[in-house]
Length: 161
Image (cartoon, rainbow, N blue to C red; front, side, top):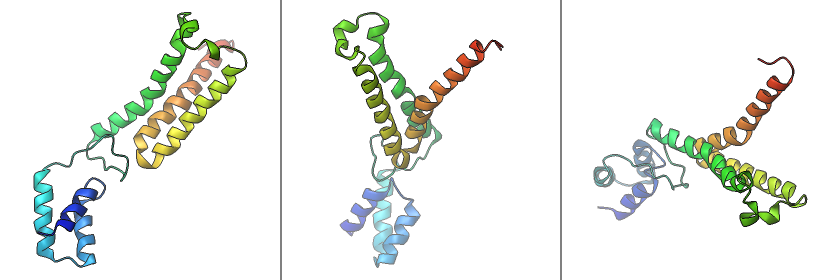
């Protein structure tokens, strides 16, 4: 058995289809019987290709809709959790314990800008690597405030619903 083929298949089996990997190996010049033996070994040990959440490179291949939903949920709820962490102290008036240095007029706009830049960076970072996380982030960071503004404008514009 050719260990190079086994290593190659293990390295790229989450990113590419089995047929594409076999075709690539045959184009490089490996013998068909070596390839089939390695494929049987690699894909028999892992009957079902597992989706590893923290795998960023190579780009994971989603095999189930639930994996897409998990990624979207993480992307959608991450900004909400972060906002709660940063804004709960001020809601309960205990900000002097946690983030009192950020409550000055000078730091608030800078802090908000840094958080916004961080979320934009996260959206761009995940766009090619984990698209559904970036989609959730995009909707949470831009969509929720936009819907809130439209809702408030509709209520306070005088026309009501």
